[in-house]
Amino acid sequence: MEKLANPEMARAMLEQEPLLNLLAPFGVSADAFAVVAGSVELLLGLLVISGALPQVVAILMAVPFTATLALFGATEFLGHLPLYGVLLSFLVLGSLEETSHSLSGLRRRAGVPTH
Image (cartoon, rainbow, N blue to C red; front, side, top):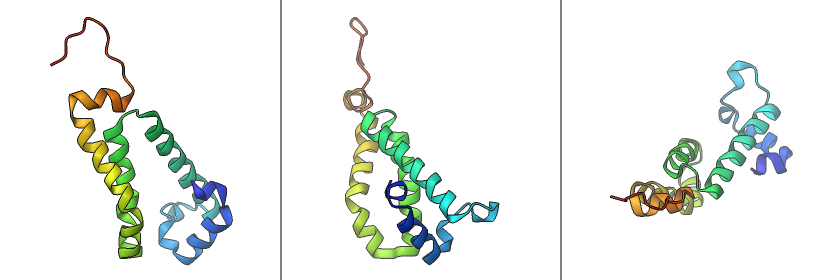
């Protein structure tokens, strides 16, 4: 989300590492890509806060965080290590019936049997 808050920083990063702009082959400028990437980060963050679809969000978030390891290596891994732990907990706890409802914010209806 820092891409939306600090577009100059995002532009500088994309100039330093042009491979990060995945939409460059389609003619998308660094500034436009920063807005798109920042908007996606904001959306995923809101989904995390809402608790909706925890497993899907965890998988979607893991893709860019893992992909950037090829460019930035161990520094990137160590910086995102706490996030990997949270994503792993979303995957595991979202699989358990007793925790999936609380993670997703769904309420159980009265009279509906649980397994």
